[in-house]
Image (cartoon, rainbow, N blue to C red; front, side, top):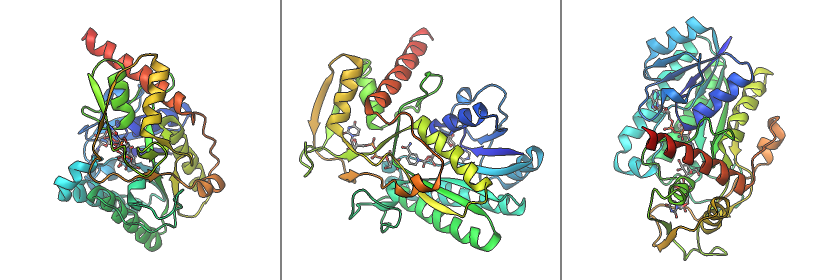
Length: 330
Ligand SMILES: NC(=O)c1ccc[n+]([C@@H]2O[C@H](COP(=O)([O-])OP(=O)(O)OC[C@H]3O[C@@H](n4cnc5c(N)ncnc54)[C@H](O)[C@@H]3O)[C@@H](O)[C@H]2O)c1
Ligand SMILES: O=c1ccn([C@@H]2O[C@H](COP(=O)(O)OP(=O)(O)O[C@H]3O[C@H](CO)[C@@H](O)[C@H](O)[C@H]3O)[C@@H](O)[C@H]2O)c(=O)[nH]1
């Protein structure tokens, strides 16, 4: 038996593949390498370079590798890009998952784990936000993920598939041993930008919005370490393996840090100052996003290990320094 990971060469996917391999779970990856890197995969993990929407490919891999579960990361992830080109997002997120599910159903794969996002909530009425909160996504990216969640629910009901939908909050950090990390070109994530500034790759960084009604005026986020998130996927796999019912779970720590606090944490761990410019609000930003973690806490056997913001910042920084050295050596 093995696990098929789509998008396994991407940021979160590669950390999950590493965790699966370290847990001794046979793993096979399908990735079209549109934003992923084959070098992010541990040696020996079979990689099929192709599209997760290609049902022939998926069915062939499921049969050849005796796949019993699918973890589906493959997709497009840039919110502003989804505003400019929504149809690309409905294709690569919603329609790709439709094809993948069709192949899974045909091949009788029973367990499915799906990467969703806190972006499905839009501006929450309640903080921390529970899974039962209304879903009002503000972007085609969020809508494409919400539509996929609905489709998955219907498919599960009709064909006896079991799923765990994981709604990630702000994923950050890197492998604690700096073997892998976020290497997406042009990534816009706050911590990535901050460590680029800390390593001198940017002359300055901007804080988008300092006039929010929050304690220091900047937005607040619930950052989850990518290695803890990878372990949540293993816990979700075990939950389904033990016959758990389909469920949707927030993935965060249930506490928030402001943008300014996050930048301060990066300054502390790197021991250097870097220029920070206060800028106007960024279009579409949600003010405060913090996960209600009660449900994941009672559903999965999952204990986060890297929840300290400074730990997340330190791991992001160590990875960034390694990337920079590799680039300079090339
Ligand atoms: N990074 C975050 O903060 C965050 C937050 C919430 C949800 N997510 C979700 O997590 C998943 C992984 O995100 P990530 O940050 O690792 O992004 P990523 O871009 O690093 O990874 C996506 C991977 O999927 C591959 N891919 C894309 N479309 C494909 C297709 N049609 N067929 C095969 N491979 C394809 C890419 O090459 C890449 O390796 C995504 O579904 C994303 O929506 C990410
Ligand atoms: O250079 C920067 C980058 C970001 N921010 C701010 O930092 C916060 C976090 O921004 P970012 O890291 O871009 O994450 P989000 O916009 O919160 O979105 C992330 O988190 C969502 C889940 O909550 C995922 O769905 C998205 O894919 C993922 O990018 C926001 O207030 C931004 O305005 C800055 O001030 N300066």
